[in-house]
Image (cartoon, rainbow, N blue to C red; front, side, top):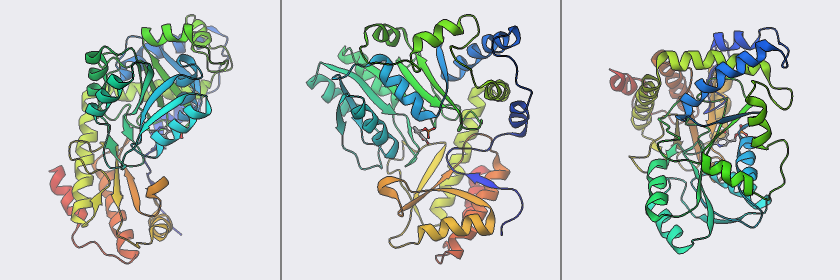
Length: 382
Ligand SMILES: Cc1ncc(COP(=O)(O)O)c(C=O)c1O
């Protein structure tokens, strides 16, 4: 039975800082009273900063999946054609949802080891002037591959195509540089349990004027997810339903931490920790899932396992002996990869502990790493 602190190294949920947890334990207040209106009114502009937007950010009591649905149902009508890319497990789930909502999805096949290729976006948009939206997962949590959102947005601009750009920033927001306005993203989808260092339970949609115009024309049935109802109520600091007040207390605290550290410093810390993680993986003689050196994620590293490696045993040993929780392979990578989350409330000391425990668990699973990953990570950090 493992003892000592838990090392939660899944790529979300991530570790929740004690001061954020403490904030969520404050007494719940009346969500129709003046203190609540003050809370929301102060919170929303600071949340916009993290998305890099001066436009509205809609907050839902939901997981990231709910925020995906909100993005699709508010600005796309049944029968609309959308362009998606098979970058991994989450891109595929989002595609499946779009199909269930009656959209026609052109899904560009991928090998789960590369991000979206802007040249392919240009080709598909040029071939199909009626595509209503392009869906991109900025950071594929299942693989550790980043896609070039700015370059995709540039293609849409250059081709003069009217498509909306919908981006999933669930595992990049608050970890990897993100600029909703500057990149001309129309809807950015995110959630609370990763870079924002909160427990699961909040979903977000950051919007553009173009997305709001599309919402007026949209023929998809929606009620709970309707942006307009939330935006109307938010104007006076309220919500059209009972909001998750205690998670909003936590969000206020988490934003204090992120903006207090400064977003450039937050991104630089993630880059440093990701670089050290990849140095360890390489010392272990293992390969990252990401096959494009320019597309490595700074929030999660996917690691390929040798053929026949007992992945389930690695998972069990890590949990039972070392109190270390790793992400395992998802979808077509199940049994063939594991994932190290290095996002959110994390520093050098915690990462080195997690990498050390991973190294022990790999050895216990029967394939001892050929060289010391922790030393390699230390060298990278120095
Ligand atoms: C990139 C990405 N998109 C969407 C989701 C779905 O979010 P949730 O599990 O909060 O519904 C996840 C969850 O891990 C994710 O990593």
